Image 1: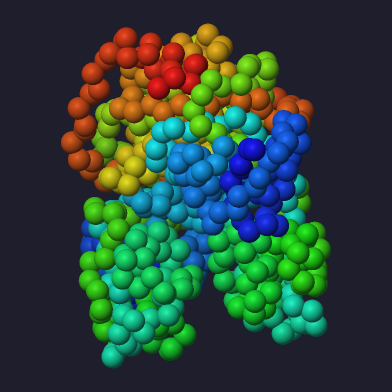
Image 2 (image 1 turned 180 degrees about the vertical axis):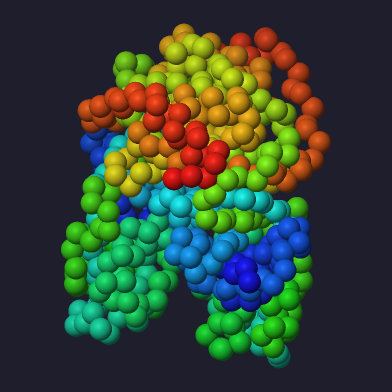
Length: 305
Length: 305
């Protein structure tokens, strides 16, 4: 049996992502294990209680899911094996009979709140936001009478005997969340030709260290998909850098760049290589206008418009 | 008269930072204007209601204050003129006579919550967190009976007739927050020899665009102090990059790098050049161990420890 830990209870988007992973990987005899946070799900892999954890890593509205990255970076022993994207919209659900004007509290996860607060302001401006540990947990809060409404995945309404008063609520059209399947550290999946590699590193606090480190990728033609600075929690202005590279650790350019980066780092932590979600078509290249660049620098230097 | 907008009400750390700016810049005839969010303070500068806005930009525990960056990037017309760092610790305050065991709700700003939740778990585990728009607003919630306790700057207790049940509460020793003084766009302050320059840019969605853009700094010896990817809110995996450079737009290397960057960007937005807060001593350089780098790459490729 394969045990997969996830942010519960049943009915979260994370559970939907878990089923996508199970389907894509043709896994069978799977037991899903709901836990109260992405950190708890990752710790369950570290302790051996679960074989995998399914966790949200990034959202197109709110950016990186920082508790997940903080949990991944706070100890070794786990790698990312796969990613999947889900379209995100919410149902607003209440106990049967509750009217919009009766809603004085609305529970949801803080990341979900960022995606529905425009709708709330327009339709139930009186509602106080109560942060929940997950949006399915918010549905439970409503079912048990501790909140009047929840913003949660629509299937959570039927699961918890609630009524949908609004469907497909999303302040930003096309909102998506990316989820990762995290497992114990072992050999990464085979390269597919379109892979991602994630690392976390810290650098000595000296001039030029960040640009010098990123040069190791540039020299070798290794591209970055994203980069984030997270505080070390030791001193303001000192960071852990979270970088996702385009490529696989089995690619010689990626391996050589990481070997060189290692020599510059205080600490370098490998988070895995895995197949990328296919991208949409690239956007067209910007037209080059040299005189516009000159005008831009002049305006910045002088404060003119 | 100079009007400075800030995250109110009176008693926030932002108000303390405001007074530091007023003192450092020897301003006189200042009126402080409390507003409900950093975005509202920045908008007051854009509309001409305020001459400056004092806003938190970064915290050593929780990282960048993303609502501030989102407000700075969501429109032109303002620049950063100065920064200041404050040591951060909290007082836990209640209505006189309330005991720790009587506290069932604790209000504070979500960023403050990240810095006191360890203390809360140890001392008042039963307390439910109520998010407040500022930590001084949380003190008002307590004074008016809508919450039992607040985590806020200690002077807020006396301002609102509350009693301190704990002082200098901070889960992470040495926690600091950096604040910026934001004003309407005009010529940046003179270079001091230790300056920072902030920009926000977006790039065409094509391979190599981020590394290529950062190369423009590396080629010219321009260092980065920090870099952040923020979602564009249009499509997952597309970002606005927030970069703080070491140097001043009046420096020819910085101006040349930004001129070259402009030609690669879909959009490039200048947020100002200003004097840096002096740094502590740099940390010692890492020892170079080439065989350790080889072992690191081998372990990542094979999953061995």
